[in-house]
Length: 516
Image 1 (cartoon, rainbow, N blue to C red):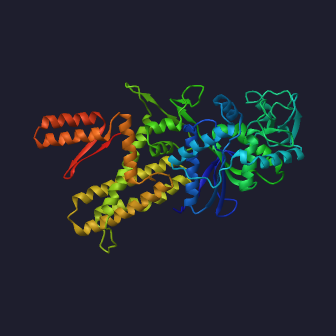
Image 2: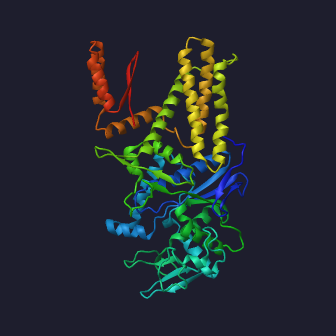
């Protein structure tokens, strides 16, 4: 889906929208900070993954070759603490949580990165980067009282510190997340390498057994896979300071006079739960699995696309009288996905047997064809505008509306053979357009029958119902209608509706679905 407009992205480094053009024509290098895998992924992880997934899809749709790198932090003090708590090996815990993350992002239809490096596999590159910083005079070693050595980055040795977060160094000490450590030369200095833990957990290094600091890993791994000075670096807004600020400082200090570490910095916004920033301390922490238990992954993905990636996204929850917790916004998004899947199914049915025809197109199809002809450009233009997914979703809604208008017209004019030939051709075009427009958004990626079965199974489970129960009631209602016991048939219909079952009576019997 090539675009006629220019791609504009909001560069946090410059704090403005900028036209994007890759350093190397036709190729884009993208690095995104991935999860620290000590626990299952939460809604914030999903939002970040989907935001950059749309970016990758859109860049590729524009004909660009994208090398997408997203790291896995599998060595971290949080992992060590959780592993001790669980009584398991840290790398065993991180491997387990990495698999959960991969499974959850796969269910959300996020494309696999070109490279997904783990810290544990790149210790040599990290050690080499730390050594380079010491040689450049930007880092120093500290002997610890109990033995071993830490290595710290000297923030004041890097002249441009604070350029990403727009903070002055003299203002940072108050209010910044600064680790208290009398061994550091300056309170703002941060760890590149830390000596082994008290229980001896660590890896060999020139400074004794130890483990890497948080920030250095991304500098080492991004440079390995993309080289120094790549196109786009991304992550959540919470990473701007200190993580990304420190990445810039140590990376550019390790490669002096070679230009910027990354040209464009993109940051996705926060997820707020019931109007408060999501956090474990507030007890409003929503995991991806919490949502999957209630809603379909594609509905969740749609919901996360309803707000442009930089804005705050409000994730509301509601407790029902029966004790169930629901997510109204995700429920509404899932209803829209139902509508899109139903639209595709209707279009496929109409498009069956479509053949080329030189017949003049009927006037009542002109408006529908106009929508289909312009839709791809509209979606592409929306995504060119700093990945404006809400506008792109509005285009999908327009495609779906006019597609259903076409299918409704086809029922009314089914006896007009020449009209039907043109309608079938238009239905085929609408399918192609809908596929292209949803492909770049990562929606409608499941076969219709599989989606229907998957959502039906979940919705029945949430209502403590089985398919057999529903079909038994429908059969009972059909028998009541056959016996002309309409009072009984109406009562059974009301009961089914109370269960959340929507029915449609047709010549071949009754079809049904479970509402969200």
